[in-house]
Length: 140
View (cartoon, rainbow, N blue to C red):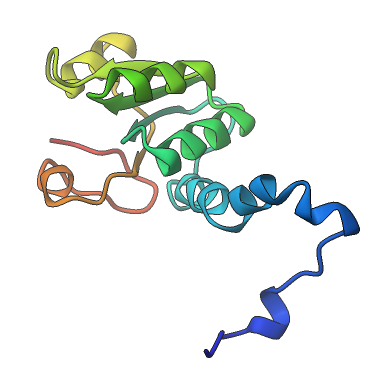
């Protein structure tokens, strides 16, 4: 197997790594992907952020936005269990099966809309709703 930049990206884990392997898995994939979505969206302190998708990556994006001191983090999904997890990380859950998510975001932001958007679903259904560009909001 070829691993590009393997000598650069691989880290030696401490002796107790076996006991904490579940924690290290989060650092190896899901956490950095969620963090990176907030980096691409240029989330900064005070921003309102809407995140489409409350799966593992979306939840890590919501948590990352919270760590970056976003003023309001809203997560859009339709699965009650995932929306409950979003609330656990401090986000506002938006159930898109109840009403259009844009309407809910506009209401939560007093008509301003979100400052930043993170798309964490990557399905045709999501991307056809609007366009995303670095540093811009998602519009439908």
